[in-house]
Picture 1 (cartoon, rainbow over the protein chains, first blue to last red):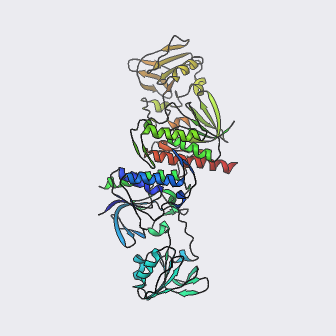
Picture 2: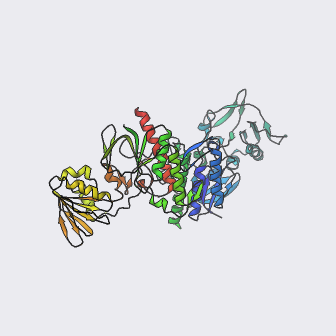
Picture 3: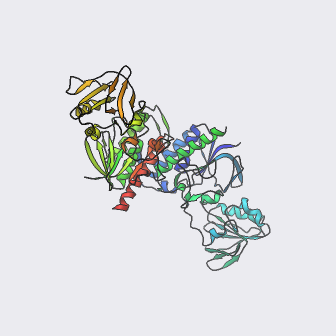
Length: 283
Length: 283
């Protein structure tokens, strides 16, 4: 079944986009990770969302209740990549593929601290998705840096393709020996190479590899969707929250400052309505 | 006392702007008419403002309570005109003058139906403010069209300047005779003239006048503040809610579609923070 709207992110912007698209009778799926908005949930007191003055936890609960009351739920899977098909989009999330006619990006601000050199080798040895890029490393050596638990499964999957997988746990240990997997302990300090990536440097050793897969809680939004235009590090949007890619909208912290709840909720509403209007025009 | 921020309008965008500017420790004055948001107050059920599903009346009351809890109140006076002084602004509201370093326009959508020809003679015979433009008509004949009660007072004031005031009540009768005032009943159907205004046409007669003062519940925002840039009939703003005039911000329905609470509240928050940031940069 093709979705009308796939929403990436379950923070305030994502939930607001969802309820608004749902009110306009669109089919909606919200993709979220375990924690929808760390910032909201840890706020001791919120006093600038008009109408409610309460704790971040309580406000988050009220948001979720509203969303749930409308028959919506969060699909707890991290989206790895989104590809345009010309008439719509394919959303790849942990090996599952969903089709959607429009996309709303509500991924928040990326808290990612990149490894030195990491951004220089994206698409030339650095990857954030085993399913997507694994086949490129058939018979080759790769490293998997695991900041999140899913890295263990990804490493095992990659071990069925690559000749050798170095697994570098960052608080995500792997139990038992696995064929083609060598666990290496150490803190990654940089990515090295010339035309393409050749080495992963750890604090006290270097590994010769052809690819490095990194699994973190958040993937920078511009790495989920190719050709997305940024402006000062944020997703570039117009006043209707449309990005440079037709059918793709964005809302909330990922569109830039100020990083505020009211802005996120307002932009989410506009993005939800814009996606609905976009669909209505083409139906 | 010079205000940090003068906010024109007491609907959701204006209140949200106010609480955000107040949190940033700015002095704020909110100018509002009797009804802050007719649309909100008449909404039987609001289901798309994330976190609360309730009636418009109740939501409006929650908004106002939040605003009041923060020590803010609404100054119930209609703003007639705003003039830039180079370093700030003068806000004229029913004969009172306030100074403000920044302005946030949150005037909503104008429901005004113009009289035929009205917009052609703004500044050349049409006026919305007796105090501001009265002296231009010293010894001349003017007409006052009264849709609101204040028109009666304005007509009396103008009668002290003009040689004759035709008062045309539109549901706002004047009791007793007044020097220099002639009450004329009839429905206005157009404004006539060549280089400047010369006649007001009523359904069954025409009045030869040099000026026509019109008093309605709402004044179109672009007539409050000269040189304000519009885009498709709405106030043109950037992503920080800045207008084309430095120090003037706008939020809510006056900035264009979609006309939604969440958008108004979000834009109000951004405008409030932008005004605060603008002040901080210059202090």
